[in-house]
Amino acid sequence: MKNFIFLAVLIFLSHKATAQKVYKTSYKSEADKIIYVTEYKSEADMIVYETQHKSEAKPYSGIWFWTQYKSEADWKVYFTKYKSEASLKIYITKYKSEAGMK
Image (cartoon, rainbow, N blue to C red; front, side, top):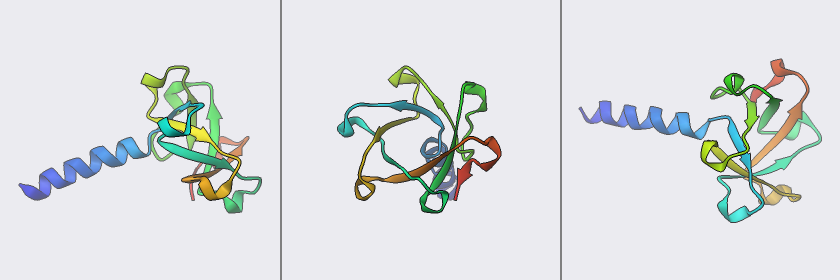
């Protein structure tokens, strides 16, 4: 029974941690992730494709849908100019097929 509960909690947390509906915040203190955008794919932890369709944004996909409402977002992100501050380094691609975690 303990293994079942542990597995259920793990699945729930992994789903929330990789969600792709994103809200850009102006305040570092309210962000779930501090993001640094790299110039090179090789420096990134995640390759991100920005979509206009909420239905395309799936966990583990790297396809991000920008929501206008904080309450809809799975991640609230703050963009930093400093790589050392970042909890996640991303590279933004023009091609959906490149999207995903590295």
